[in-house]
Image (cartoon, rainbow, N blue to C red; front, side, top):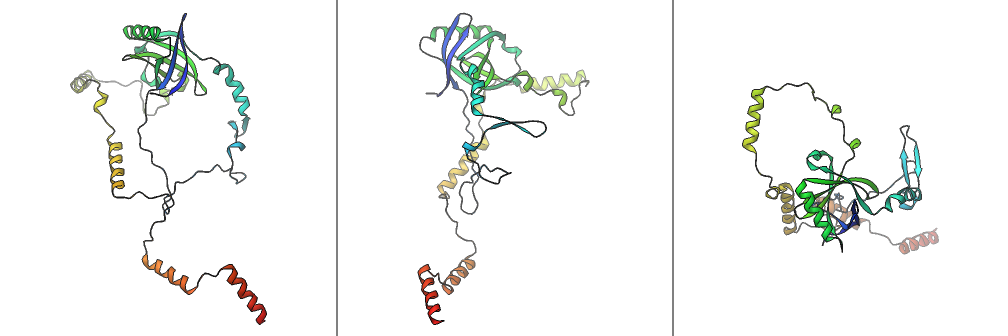
Amino acid sequence: MLHTVWKGKLAFGLIEIPIRLHAAVDDFTIKLRTIHKTCYTPIQYEKVCPACGQEVSHDETMKGYETSSGRFIPITESELEKLKEPFEEEKDIQLLHFIDLDEVDPLYFDRSYFLSPSEGGKKAYFLLHEALKHSNRAGFASLFLHSNQKLALIRAYENILVMETIHYHNEIRQIRDIPNISFDHEVSARDLELTGALIEELTAPFQPEKYVNEYQEALAQFIEQKLEQKEAIAIGHQPAPKDVASLMAALKASLDHPIVSPQQLKQKKTVKRKEA
């Protein structure tokens, strides 16, 4: 059962469909942590104020906007919550209009979510799915998700509806800012024909299930081998010193200079005072 990240209604015209939103993509990247070479303990990153030199707790922090002059405008959590209120109150995905999917460049796509119908919404849900599928269109929508206002497309995918959040137009960088790009280049007809023929020869059906992340598989196998060789080390474990001679020297020094307890040290001082 997929976790629900949002629930509300999908609305267009006079039709309202109760729905739930589920993340459509899993990240299977193997996470590697940074540990201390000496004792293999995970490194912690503390929040330290560079001006005060002191560690700062979560209760001592707040949001702030940095201006171009390097000054900060402080913004409290209550101020942010007040700004979000009118947006968070709206629990509907309102379809503003419908668009042809072929008009949308993949550059605009951000994240994908599966939509599932809630109780009482199945009939309208599958009716919309079939209509979008046969028309090759998508619903263009706006919603408030993860503390931000998002644009989205609702489209048919296999036998369900999928929501694709998309970037705002001003978030797409201008191609004129890319170096070494010419807008007045010329291509010969012969070169274009040969390249087109090569593309046609190498064209194959889209079958993403045929491909796997070979690096992640190799990394997983490498870690499994280390586990089998019992190379897993408990947190805080001190590795054996590489220099045995140094260890023996340290032990000899300890024998030559035995540890004196506080009681023994006090007794020695008392004896010295009496002798004096």
